[in-house]
Image (cartoon, rainbow, N blue to C red; front, side, top):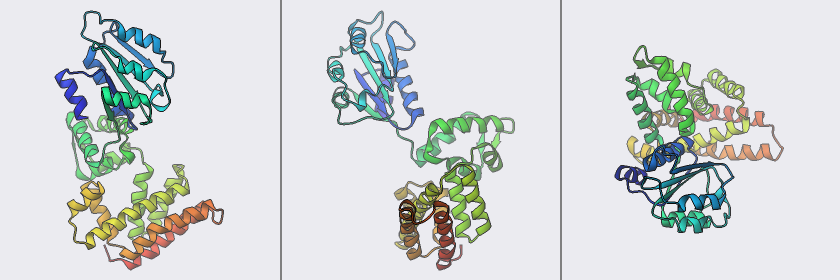
Length: 332
């Protein structure tokens, strides 16, 4: 987001911007921030359009009109779908925008082959708003907690930072609840995070693999039934287990190569405490058995989709095989 921040800080605005991507929180935050920087809440010089109804002629009339006691007129176009189709005339409109106009497109998804996308890229600025990586998410969480005047214990932070996909919309709401719950005592502890935050499937998968890799069948099955109660399909449980064992295999091979913890964490985009937890899990399996478990998820997926095995049977069989496979590792 450096380019957007520079433009806002320097008040040097381009004629067209596109902010797109899966993270709605970031997309809306920067769209609003940019539009406010250009003309604030000046309704005489600002036009906001949402949805599919985007009449080109009305937009052209607006941007071709000189600003009223201001430097620029701004149009904010949100979720129009114009960047996912052949939008006739819009690329030409962007190409001919006067210096006194600024147009901001905010879209969840785009087709980079469209004329409009290419024209915005040529004439303006394109920024993807993707979910933040592990380090950026961790920094964001710490800033939010610090701004509220709270401290957080290491194990509580580990629970917070494992929220899946790092969707800032969802995470922001959950974090606000947690901060409000802990304001009086000034500190967030592990039991607070576990009590307040949603128990997400990805967290339970991690807990399940901890239990499986330690040979704790009862605890692993409790996690499994929690996932079913969360309406997580058995096929997705198999997928998540397989993805995790693929990462464990990579961790194991890097350890065998003598790679250091911070190097492994960087290569796999892992937070330090997650890398430590995965290293512990990886040491409980041999490299060959991790390779087998990685491939086994694909076999079970095919068996279910081809009709030769029920999904619940496949998921439970996979867990049984994981429990058996850990015997080839080292105690951890």
